[in-house]
Image (spheres, helix red, strand yellow):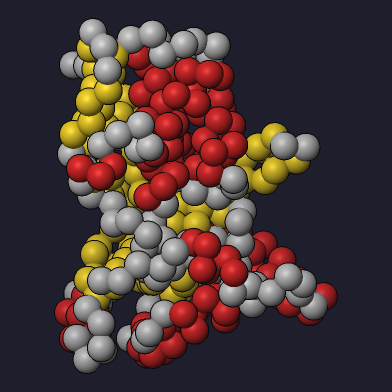
Length: 296
């Protein structure tokens, strides 16, 4: 049996729209086992235990890439700790898990770069895919339908809290609200802050994160789709957080801190309890390993 563990991811990281992503120590785990025939899926709602399951679709896509027919049965087990449609890369994680599982079932025939390429073809963009595979903070671009990526070293000392609401936000809806064009001023604004963000993450100038993590490309538009978004952003700033951003397409909000306020989580939970919707606060660390494959 093959076991594949894939970390949750947080894309964009403020100004790095569709280019930056980070992996966290919140995981989905998938098991793959060859059986005589058929498809068996466990660990998810019954309506997803069929050939339309995203993990299985990714598994088949990888087989096609390796020019191998599905001439055997497969049992897939799913242990999911990453909430769905919350801006934590749940679809990319399923896709990466299925592709990696297929590669290992056939003897480890896929490289990490190949997993990223196949997953990006399914997902449409690599900002969640690359950190799910590689871990850490990854910059990813598309050039001539090929993914190019680079992982950066992040200085120690950053802490993270994910503020996760009890309601989803579809990526399609979050995409639809974005404008089709941007001003030169807004483009320069984001380019400069993305550059600053990468530098402060790598050299430890965390006092500059609050300036570097600002964005004009997607957060001003998507924030209006999330009840309580503006109030939460203001509260995180007033509590002394290093910076706060919308995770992926939302609705999860990620805030960064230095760990010097032991009461921060309680203070955030107290504030969130005053809002209309329910919000959970989860403490996270950056995962620097990416996918982890074991054989049992």
